[in-house]
Image (cartoon, rainbow, N blue to C red; front, top):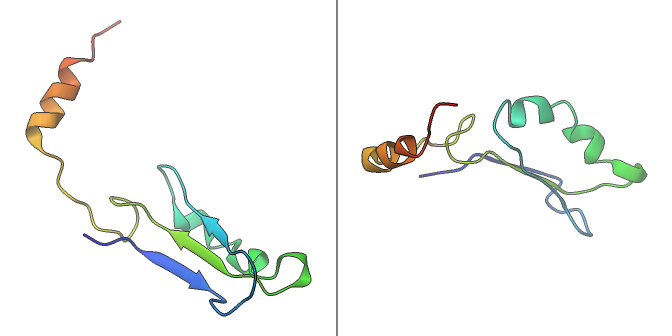
Length: 78
């Protein structure tokens, strides 16, 4: 399995800005803010971004069918 990552200004000093995301567009929306974050406060900053497994260009591991059935069994209609 693999996770898609992005590393901007990897040689910049200081603490990097690390971006993670929930479900949805992932890095798709973040791409418009990377350059701004990479120069936050007028200084060169390192920015690291990660697409979780199953998101965007990261691999999509299979979910074991027996776990899917167990999870669905716990859902009851209202």
